[in-house]
Length: 147
Image (cartoon, rainbow, N blue to C red; front, top):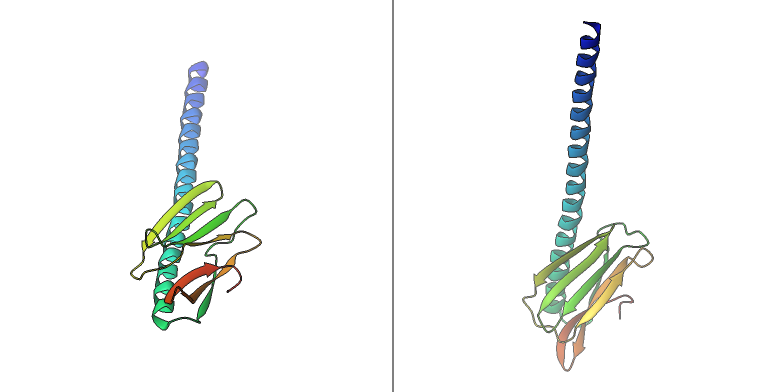
């Protein structure tokens, strides 16, 4: 009878242990999923903000500029590429954050004349959106130095 009781107790402890490990694993996966959703949401809002800024600067005309910053704190291996693509008429944000790659696109409602790219890193996390004149027409660019 004592031997049976010991086996029953060991079996019960094993079931409780398996249940606890499964709950911890599920919690870890949910936290990881929430972090990915948080980063992707911030990047999407960032791309919408850039699209709206480009449109506003275009409507103001040449000579205006707005400073923008990375929406996330960047580590040494992280980067965010901000691209204003004249060929497709889009603002593209490509990012590599904590080992994951993200990509979001916003369609521009205004024509841009040139494709420009800035690379945001831990050392350089700010950039400028600048309205200029290119070929006699208003153009909007991204740059690291505001020119």
